[in-house]
Amino acid sequence: MLRKCDILIPEGNPDPEEARRLLAERVGEALSGGGDRGSAGVTRVSVPVRPVDPFLWLGEQRYGTRLYWSGREDGVEVAAVGAADFHRGEPGELPVLRESLGALLAGGDARTHYYGGLRFDPDGRREERWSAFGGYSFVLPRFELYRDGAEVELVCNLVLPVDGKRRAEILEGVEELRFPEGETGGELPTPISRTDSPDREEWVRGVEAALSGISGTALEKVVLARRTELGFEGELDPLLLVGRLKAATPGCFHFYLQPEAGSEAFVGAPPERLYRRDGRSVRSEAVAGTLPRGDSAVSDRELRDRLLGSEKDRREHGYVRESIREELGPLCRELEVEKGTSEMRLASRRHLVSGVRGELREGVTDADLLRALHPTPAVGGYPRGEALRAIRDLEPFDRGLYAGPVGWIGAGGAEFAVGIRSGLVGRRRLALYSGAGIVSGSDPAAEWEEVEQKISDFLAVLGLSGRE
Image (cartoon, rainbow, N blue to C red; front, side, top):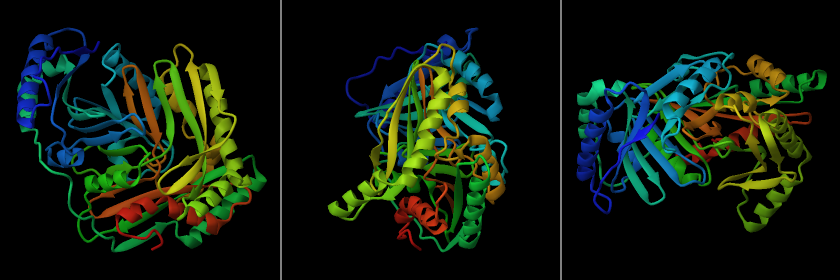
């Protein structure tokens, strides 16, 4: 059962020093009142605070576990540090995880979330660089800077009765929270090296092998990805990178996940929602097909018309839409799939999109939704089993969390983006991941250029043109 402290606070947003004092007082009261209770539950203690740059705030905290999340259109932005509760395991254990989280979060504050993500393929190859993330990892942050529109809160999450024994440690953590002034500054380093895996020759061979499989088997589509590794002379600050990426990619989800001190950080700006659940209501979307925005109104309209009229892209989009219908249908009492196809227009590119809405059957959980929807044909292929086998055979690297579900699970809902348009930051290197859907008629050179265009937002904020 989740409990929330009643908080009496002065009007207006206190300055950081006053907010920290108020939070320490309320946390102390919560620990005194709930530390010896027998039932487990989460208490969300919050006080208003004056706005502060979330990326600057994150960079000043001493905790190794750090994350950032902002939704695509709900106006909520969360910067968080520390772990009040942390779960890492394999995707097959998700039903047990959801049962555990459900017991802690049942009937509680809708703003209390566990944040994290899942590997794209739990049965695929694994590389050490992704080890801190496990098959999945979800964290209930200890401290949050939580913004909803114009309102900003400083939050401490407590897991009772366990945290009753950590009173001194938690109160010390409150006192150590830092509130720097100003905005995130500094320059991102320019890459000094680039390595593509696969390279152009290997890519052509891989696409040709995929096309051969498509013509001779039940496989209709496979999404092949590329990893572009950039090297730097100095260290690359992942917080500065995601901050710049957020400014350059409006209309997208934005995330930063660093599960441990010293671990690599997974960052991204995906446009695509896997699903959003509010109670029993669920929303998803079929997204496929990609073209850039034009450099004039005329060329922009021409590119829009070209995408909407592309037989190949509409065929790709159809696989995604029908797959979501097939997978969500058995989980819903009602399901409505948008009949038409429209344009998802972003700052630098456009996609085909169709909306999906449903009312879930009783007993359907987030674990059921994740198992049913991931991976969609937009990031894996169709049919799913054949596509995954082709990816394992043809891709020379570990996707890790790339193209996997990234998001949060809360008391009354959940939201997951598809972890595309993403990269893994490790001190002096950045691994960028992106893919292209291969169907009958695909051209290897055109698909290479599509992948290049999809990483162009990252390249642009790093001072590259996207063609270097």
